[in-house]
Image (cartoon, rainbow, N blue to C red; front, side, top):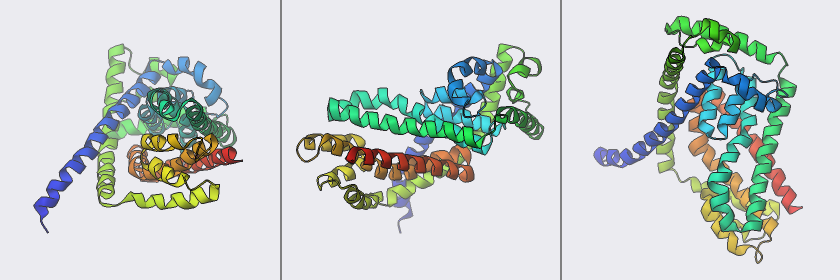
Length: 346
């Protein structure tokens, strides 16, 4: 075994993983930093006016509203905010899962303007493109509304107040252990002016210190998990998962022409769209084309969960809670995609 040759082959793989981690770390830093500033400067109170229609019925603290709206611009930054609020004790595990679920539609919104409208719809054509994007939007919105209902059922109206009290205790314990005193923002919006930093410079400095502390805990874990998964993917043919395409297409009652589209779509959405477009009106009806792409999305989701979602969620939350986030996301997406497929094939 040529160890030197193996090492040379691994260098670009590891470099690719570390480059991805570096990009994610930047967005996490932005999210955590904004979360600290939002609490310290009382931005939460202003944002709450816009987001309370979701956080109110879901019995979530106002702080979650900042993360929800931030997700529309950057999913990673939004998750970074939620991670900060959970670690400070402002969100329980159940409340965090509810918040992550509500975030779904807002994470979808950014892709409408960056990918679906400028890339996918021109490839698919107006009719099929709008049908597909509309289906994806409806799925994301259904998941978000499911999160709101789950919060209304599972969380008590007093949860926000309980979260603030827990945040006080967690911040005190954190400060005692670390000796940093950098989490004063966890004392709550009203108290921040009295007990927290008094000047803008101090607020920014303390937010930066808290952000750095969070990054030193998250990024090393993220780097290890991403590197291991990238190495595994480089040596394992994940295309074996495409074997599920046949049974899925058969159960859905789709014609044989749908099978290659599902396989291609599962690994490259753009290529899949280019593959299905010529078949519309001939081998596939518009509804069958959309159903085919949605089924391809289920297989694609299985691949992306392993390659990207698991490493990211484990890096943000740790293996135990990260597994819960992945499980909830996966279950809800598969269920609602299946419902959408059924609706198009009725």
